[in-house]
Length: 411
Image (cartoon, rainbow, N blue to C red; front, side, top):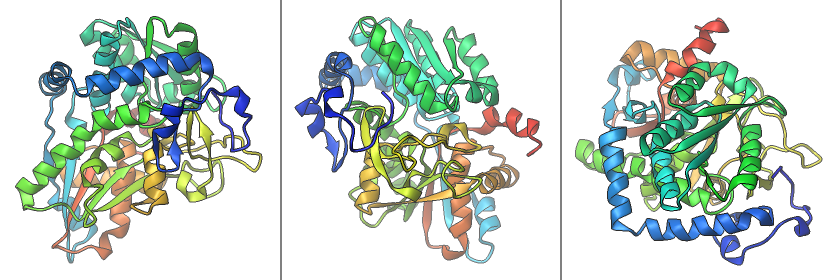
């Protein structure tokens, strides 16, 4: 359950032919201890059945509408657009996932997976969280559906996202501090997987991003595709065509793959993911996996990940807890490999400036994660023009980030 490079001993892993065939091109697969293969196969079967089950889909749709608050609107931000390109501003539209219950897109996936857990007869939900948004969403979904939630969170992330820790606990979740390693998301995933290995008979692992072993990347992408499906329809309603460019931040990649999904086969739509550039370009100073583009396995998935010369997982750095992860989901790895999507990075400083600019021009405070997407949009603004339509996924709101930014004297 720790990272390894391509020279890993095959004897340590059980290879399911069905799972290994479920790849995104060269990436993905299921590289897990044999102990977990039975619950993974059980989940795979149930998910394939449930996503075709009209009663399951209706229950999820009702929850997304009446509990989470879907559909979320598109907001055109004309003052922001003029601020970043006063001469020839493009039309910029924000997909407002920040307006969902719990404050981010994570609730889409948490509700879907908690419904799967109920169908499997599981009473206990295990989850990991970095910025806390998946933890909050899982705590909320579990409370609403009568399930017990146990959330693993790195000690560093708990410190910088204490407001989300308090929200999880208020909703009845147990938040388990992970003090070792980098004390961030990678280590929280490790502990969540250890828990699941010992408790899968009555526990369900609710993975928060489009990564990990098959079928999790597919499950998360399926539940987050509602973002893109709504967006595509809303773009047709607002300006009668697809957007020219879709931009989203990329940590594990759930919000980005969600909004990219319906545009993947539209070559006229450019897709851009923005990673955490941190405070430098050296290994350990950022969380930009595509900057080094080294392949390997982490948490059951073959993908791009940050690793040192010995193939060990490298440390990461980002002001944004939600982007502070050394690997990326396999769908994004394949989109990069095929050059269907482009991936860039934005620094901590640029993200903070973007957060402040959107707040001052539009009265919208974005999460630090989403601010990375806005930061790159600011960077390329001089190359854009007024007949272009830009769609940005505002994946979450920034209330959670303000205490840390104020404590550090950055606001």
